[in-house]
Image (cartoon, rainbow, N blue to C red; front, side, top):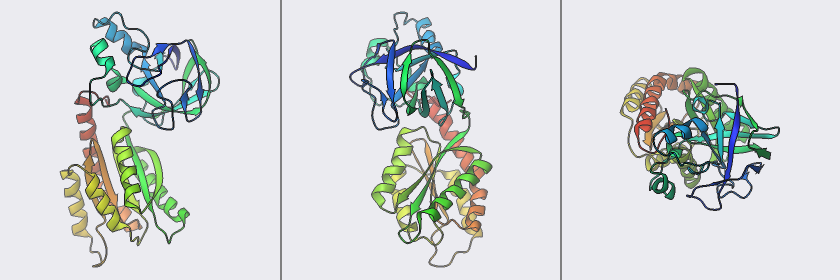
Length: 321
């Protein structure tokens, strides 16, 4: 396909869960979405996109009466390979608008009006969702370009650093950055987000569920600063959040523990689990030896993430290829 695509349709709706109506043009607000659309707001799915080629495919399968907006998409884009773009990719529209991809596909837990009307809904499998970085006006026929491409096949990772009361934020930010850099170089992966979270169990739980349940993230690493007293809280939150174990990762972690001889008061270096199709790994010690030990677990982490992604691709209502 060409390096630049075109907006074929701009669609809005007043309510969620229903088909949208093609309007020809619209105004986008920064960190809000499309003015007047039900999905606009302070969250990560402000704008939805579908490739015109995917809609054409559905027409060829027998849904010849499909109209723009029937799958609740805001924007129909032609001649741009949306399927190659991963989270964090940025797309420019027209002269002013820029959006950033925040989610690939969406699990539908119940059949919506769109499914019953069309007989299928491809948004869960093929749809993209984005946050508005720069607002402006858009219209049908506007040029669409990829201003930053993150390859879809890269693993997507989030790093959370637990904020300690007796340490400066810069220290924890440094820990977060060090882990993110190491993962990017050695996994390899795209670090979608880096965040500081408080030691409060409720905030840590919200952060983990936010990224595991709504962003198509492959891996979440939660870490705390050297000598941190938050290790127990992290372990407690991880245990309460995960739904099942990751046997290969746990086996690799057991090998790390066998080589590491901590003081009696030291918490385990690593623990892990799976929530949905996202692997969570806790690194409760961030000194250089612990980071080096993490490297020994990376092959198992990468393998587990790939298996989870493959499984997610095969489930109805998801779309990670």
